[in-house]
Length: 426
Image (cartoon, rainbow, N blue to C red; front, side):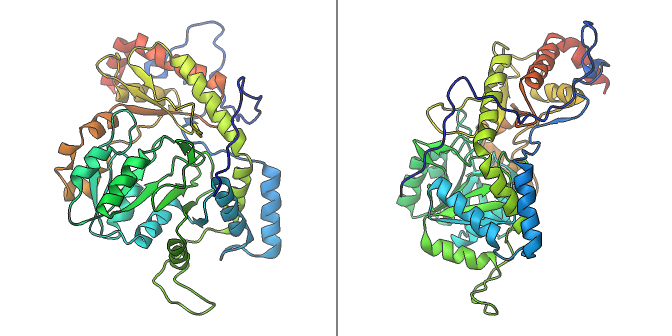
């Protein structure tokens, strides 16, 4: 099946008018600005979030909602759900797409559809839902370390963790940067294991020219409100496996095969029509969303360049990317402030940066009690979870906001002694 090409934006970037600007601090008339942590006014009157929802064309969305209300078809595999599934399938070039009420249920359906039992290998450096979806079904998550550069599963570490009880591997495409899919597929094939990818960050991204959605036995997307492409709340499983897709469709709707015939164990994982309508509307604006994200990432790269100890996580320009996350690594051996100290400074100035993924699944419950020794085998995960910081981006952020965020960071480092004293006072 031919894989559609995603539109690439030439330089310079097109003019975009989607920014929903966050009001900044009033003009101080040329007086030097004081950090909020040191008693000054916050840099932003309203909080600047990492994942403030993107909104597509409101008129188109309202028209779809009105149509839904007129027909009174609100759920149960309605026309918008079917349209959203087809649009996703066509966009990726995959045979089957099954949208769900959220990404976690999509993971749970895929795991059960692939009959993952016993032990499954996955990274600890991921959102806890990846592990929870396994543990909820009484399948043991075996936490594996990640590569220090890619932040995704280290294939050599995966191979060392395979045991007679291992039934599968779950790779996580992080920040929109993909796993080493070929290496993981080779390991899964040689050991006769199932391979599932959590692609919550990676809709619209590619690996070696192939769009995410074509790897492993299946891949799972999230369309949560904080994702760059959202359906208010939702998720999807995509696969080229006909048998798996048929099984998942039954499982998504209580196992019904007819109006009053149940032939399979299932659950209610259906997406509602209003969520599908939002998903379609978002998908129609995907090129603009990606262009905005790409422009923001480039602006951050310019503004943060030359700050010792800060590394902005790059994207491969030869691949398709959604640029959904602006992530930097804070090296405590070089920076005058630690990641957590810098976080407190930013939060005081209403820049709500996030520690992704802190402290690592293995240090959260129930995993730290069930598997207390897991951290001994996760040195890269431990290191990254104490250094990574995600900065605000999306259509709520533009060059002016990025310049001000970078200014807060530079000023915090320049006044590190005073900042540390203020933090110590609480």
